[in-house]
Image (tube, rainbow, N blue to C red; front, side):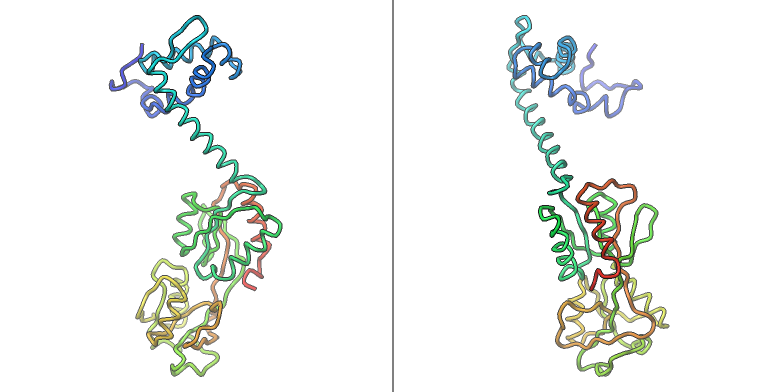
Length: 317
């Protein structure tokens, strides 16, 4: 006997499958739509490839669950009732949405024209990533990219949430739920204003900047962690004057005389600053690619992953 929808079910079958219309009705929507289209149970059963008796029982159970008659019956021929026409309109929209979703995921997985959700650091977005995509698309001209620029921790969170397939980040993460591969390293420079007392130098030990004010990225950024670690290795804790979210903004703050910074090389020379090679400690940041452990790759993602791993040692060349 059918139970009214507002009556609580305290039996062992209670739970999402017993309390959600979607769970109960979804498997039968296509059957209902086929019967409505043909207005004949036998022809609908032939189209669906199921026995006519099975389809008849399914439609009867659907009407019982809903508590309304969806069809008026004349032998094996049927016609929609007013309630059936209302239900059919929503059913067709739901089935069309499922069809669109299926086509979308199939298109994203297409080896020739699928989609790759790719994250990368802001500092890699001016030259490195455009160059990588250009080179990859020589052999995969129709593959589409969803590009996400962010700092390392935010990209790792998005990777874990399923919003990214791959990301280029620094430092290279070490976590049991991730796979990460080092691709290259990038030297960091001490950037000072061009009228600074150290501006005439070519090289410097980082300890010589212990008394300077630093401009850095905000906590949580990989480059900030590297800066703090290098300064600690040099025997001091940096005095922070300003914190920002983007490396070239920091370079502008240095040019304005507001502090010094440890930064990767700029894509083009920036006026107003001098960039010094740090001789001690060894000031580099490692760049790596990361993905979720055990996450199945679509063909385009697998191809791009192989391409990135082949760039080991020359990613930043």
